[in-house]
Structure formats: structure tokens, C-alpha cells
Length: 93
View 1 (cartoon, one colour):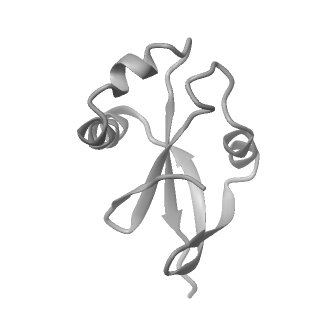
View 2: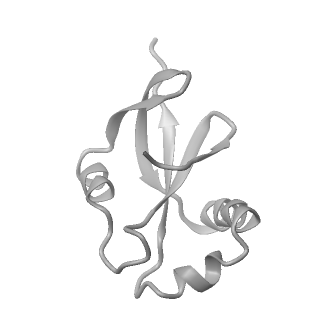
């Protein structure tokens, strides 16, 4: 189970393994195969996953900081930047 925030039609979460150094296996798997089927409370959703970059990452990270005042301190425990993973819905034609 992952916490997520909505951003328009997209969902986003942080790729972290607690605050330990290694990236979580689910994020490594999505980097290799970004198409995924996720289960939400409202039902399943087919998505394509990617890492947010630049201004988008900053904006999405700020949304997480609004939830957790200590986020920057916790994130500083990791030797690398924590990826913000965006899940973009795949719409059937």
C-alpha cells in the first residue's frame, strides 16, 4: 500500500524504502517496465509510471511537504534524492 496525492488526472507518490538508501523494489521494477495496473479504492487503473523532474518535481515535492513538516529532514537521511513517481492514467481508445 502506498500513499499518493492526486494532481489533475495523475497520481504521485515518493519512491522510498523507509528513509533507507536503497530505492524500493517496486520503483526499480517500474523503471524497467513503466506500464502498471494499480488498485485504488474506486477500482483498478492502468497507468504509466515515470519520475517527475525539474519544476514538476519541485511542485509535487512541495505538496508532500504540506502534509509532513519534517519531510526535508527525513529526506536528508538518504544519500540520494528521493524520486517523486508520477502515475499517468492510460485511456482506452
